[in-house]
Amino acid sequence: MNILHLEYDKYPSTAIELLRKRHVVTPFNCYSQAELYRHLKANKYDVIFTRLGLYMDSICIDYQSNTLKFIATSTTGLNHINVDYANQLGIEVVSLRGDYEFLSRIKSTAEHTWGLLLMLIRHMNEAVMSTKSRKWDRNPFMSDELSEKTLGIIGYGRLGKIVAHYGVAFGMKVLVYDCDKKQTCS
Image 1 (spheres, helix red, strand yellow):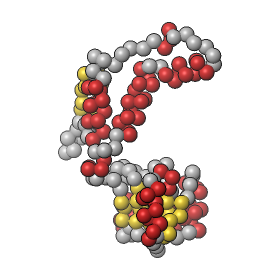
Image 2 (spheres, helix red, strand yellow):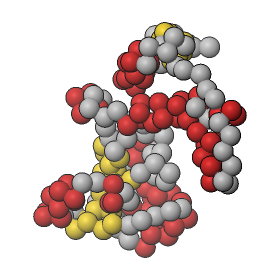
Image 3 (tube, one colour):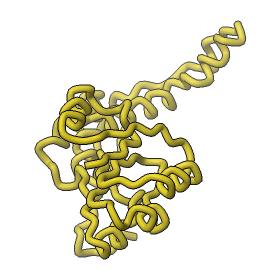
Image 4 (tube, one colour):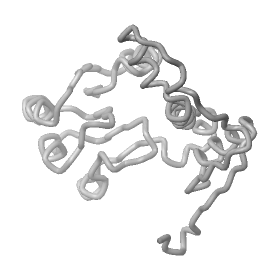
């Protein structure tokens, strides 16, 4: 199979080598939708490993419709792929959606959430900018502690549970709200 890999440098080299043993793998660092269109118009692939930031829309799929069999993404969300259109053409979309065993080990999004939260409460961006400009007055950057604060989480799925767990570790009171899938949230 002829494979286009748009996220080549983010995958383990062992995974890439396994692909290369049986298939032709083309790495392509693509930074814009227009660049992706040009590439897909000029080249044909059986499989495309896509990434966030690029949209596998009907134009991309049409450029590949005679050969494309799979669109693969290392995400759970699929809003960057026109899944309905791909399915209409018999193209299978492969993602991490529903792979609960694997996803239970992935905590980077929850960690990023906490990194942002800590940046905000500690005024880190402002403190770094002040330090870079060779000024340092700690008073504007005095912050509060997270302990005994309340953390509100909307959505108590896999990520919500991890974020809540970290909140408890910080000594916070954690409140969660999660909609039943059968109800409408407002």
